[in-house]
Every structure is written in C-alpha cells, then in structure tokens.
Image: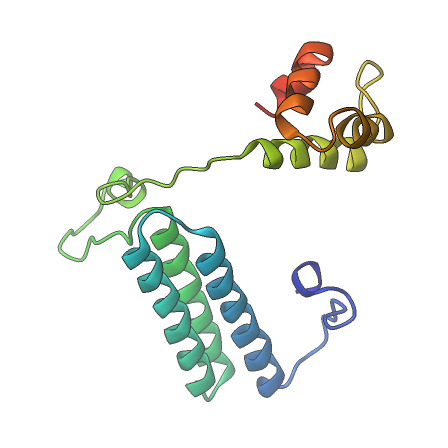
Length: 176
C-alpha cells in the first residue's frame, strides 16, 4: 500500500488491523484499480466499462462483508477475476471435468492484451533507467541524457531517441 499511496498514509504496518480499517484499505485499492483501468485501458470501451463495473462490485462486496474471511474471499475473488479479464477474458471451464492448462491460459478468444509505447514513454524509460540503475561505463549518465533532451533537442523525444540510437545503441536496444 505504501508503494501505491505513499509512506505517509500507509507506512507498511504489519500489525493487526481492525476489520473497518482493512475494508477501507481494500475499498481504496479497488477504487484506485478502477480509476487506473479507466485512464489506461483503451481499445474496447464496452469491455473497459465492464471491468470497471466489476471493480465497483468488488467494493460493494467488501463493504458488505461482515467477517475477515468474507473480506479475504471477496478481495481475492475479484482481484483474480479482474486480472484475468484484463488479460483477455475470464476462463470458463465449468463444463470441463479437468481443464487442460491451455484452456486456462489461452485467454485471447475475444481480445488480446497489447502494450504500446509512445516516443515520450520510451524516453521516460531510458531516463528512469539512467536515474535508478547504475549505467554501465559506456552508457551516458542521467545528467547527460537530461541535458541532451532538454537543451540540445528542446524536449523533442523523436530527436532524442535518434541520438540515443546513433550514439548509444546498446542503451537504445535495451528499451526498443
């Protein structure tokens, strides 16, 4: 929770929590997932709305739960349902006595998850890597990359990526 909302509000306490607090945190989490889906899932608007509705249903189920066990069951059930739906569809093997693993994992009958990146997103990945990981000796530093992007290329991600591709091919290939 601290990595999502920050340390101030969720300091990673591993102590026992009252049911009311646990419910509040899970409701907040499913609400955040719902908003993230609304902002980040594109391509199939009706399906996106359906997944967002499932997040709202999860919130209602958690709020209506009376025991810790009911809360845990609702949170786990809806979390995995939403994960599978985001991957393509919820497996439907009710009529199968023993489902083959391919029937559980091949979720692309109706849609396929596809990640795309803009030039600006690639630049952000390169800068994040240079800032958080120790670049190898031949790789440019974060300061140099930021200077090139902002001063030499005036924030143009396409020109910056062309420069990285020409001057630092191994770094470019890592994020292409």
